Length: 234
Image 1 (cartoon, rainbow, N blue to C red):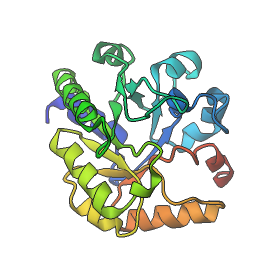
Image 2 (cartoon, helix red, strand yellow; image 1 turned 135 degrees about the vertical axis):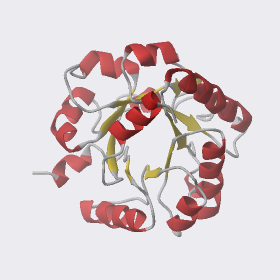
Image 3 (cartoon, rainbow, N blue to C red; image 1 turned 90 degrees about the vertical axis):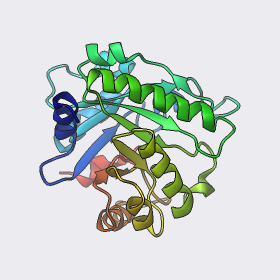
Image 4 (cartoon, rainbow, N blue to C red; image 1 turned 90 degrees about the horizontal axis):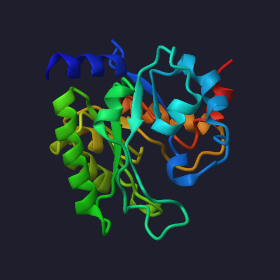
């Protein structure tokens, strides 16, 4: 790993080996979803507790203070929406050159393994890794399941996570599941949790997060609960 890549990874993962990423990117396919109608307002109270911000270039330029200290993970895949035919039909939406202009610490891309667009999304990942290696920018692969939430089991997520690592992702973002240690154990790069079972209370969120951390995750990147997480902090 060259100096630039290693430096960016060190900005994302804290000296204790853990991290808390704040994802404000769901609008790229969900639009103004609940709790993220005004992403700038959601970001403000949570930034002090975050190790990095996962965001699209549009929201980054529009509402994020350039003077903030937290590093940025830039969402660079998309092209689909909740009202479209298939969320898995994503492409690359942002160039690595623009990522460099934005001084990001990493870029993030979704992959849809087992879908009709599996090959396309994996080739997108491979292309992005090639570009990232040119500029010293690590890639975070997101093991997306689209609308098929029943895919969230250790066998499937372990398969997805390993393939992402094999293609060069430096970090994998995947869902918590039962026997999560099997997912982590088969993935040779750090794993962060994207979310878990339906949680109606903050306590339930904390419980599955603790379980995942105990089983090997280095941290969290909770999307749909990021807005509600405000209530976890004073």
